[in-house]
Length: 382
Length: 188
Image 1 (tube, chains in turn yellow, cyan):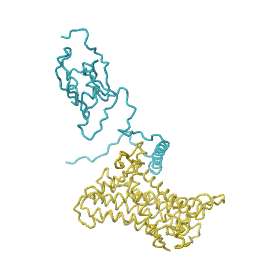
Image 2 (cartoon, chains in turn purple, blue):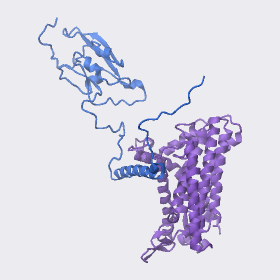
Image 3 (cartoon, one colour):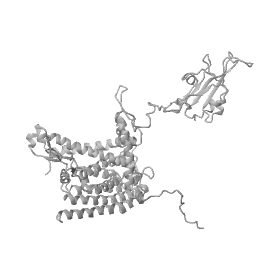
Image 4 (tube, chains in turn orange, cyan):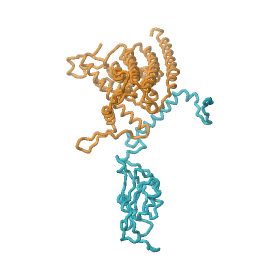
């Protein structure tokens, strides 16, 4: 059941605002976290001066994101002479748009009843509840894989059409890496699908709201810790960030498939990368960390292991679920940045060997073990 | 003409990886633990109002741990009446390896003991290497170096020149070893 148009519009605005904010703020978080990890202060020179005063707003360097955006917009837009003008112009968008689209099927909160939330809307919506998800698709997980597969086309397009050998080589590196790790990512998810018996993301999150053995939250990471690790690794590789950033190892190689891009076209690639950090975090949260679920909280209120129940009003539940999802995303983004500033880059052969000889067998072993256990527990009925 | 095939040189202390390191995951976890620990420790310092960084916020904030013997900004010493002790002999300018000292000498008929004095004494701090040879070369104890750094951040190298008046007055020093007017010997 899809939500009415007005509710969907609100969801879309929320998702857009969320993603664009993450794309901007993550640049700041990345700089500051790297600085704190390295005993430094970090970028804090950009400021906004209140007109006609000497009062400068620095805000811990938050305005560096704005300065970056302005720089990207005002730089010379270098006109390369590409093989194919259309493909060249399309490349950044084909990379950027699917990344944004993935969020459409991710549930970012439980169910909301607008009529109970705002009394003014009670007449319109009554007691109807809607899941907080833009597109409540039955095949949400498959849609995610379809869209993240599209980004490969974007990188290949931009590499091929640039009329530059370095771009072409970078695109080949990117393509082979992303295809390799997409395979691993898919295989790690299959185990989870076996356990939950569905590819509907909303249903998957709902199934994670209970508890295991009475105490442990029934999150995917408790069922499939191994798959969670493999999935996160493959997802970081999919996003082409250090230690897997060979497609554009800017400190050693030419900037890879976007060598011939400048100004905001290049900015779109970077923006897509930063948004994908948040998307990966959201995906991981949805699949393995119980999505918007706080342990022991359901739509009616808290139910603690001892049997104590604490009813909570609807509005508080909605806000708590939204905030829980956000906090989980932010923590996971921070973890990805931690990985990015800790591990050295792989060599090209190491990268592919790691995918095909290490992660793929491990994912297969994990899958076989999961199949065996599920078959034993459910007697082959699943 | 064939070259022998390239053989990679083996060193006696080549790093060896055991199965633990080869498994990669454990060492990755350890590395993440180290960096994450540093991050949390520094974050805790920032959040409790202390400084969680080793670097300083230059030029608003200057580091406090310069040695007392640090060779920083130059001082031109003064005679008791406030004129420079310098006799414009050009020894410092001659010995200076970076050739940053420029002196214009002039004649002072009122001072028979030291008729030569500098009307212009300029140091280009954009090129100075802070070796201290000018201090050692000076026969008159007229130039010294203070621990304070020049602190001349600027957008133009012409902003990094310091002249006679600045060097004389930024940290006045009159305790010159040579007395004035000179005693003993002949002034000729």
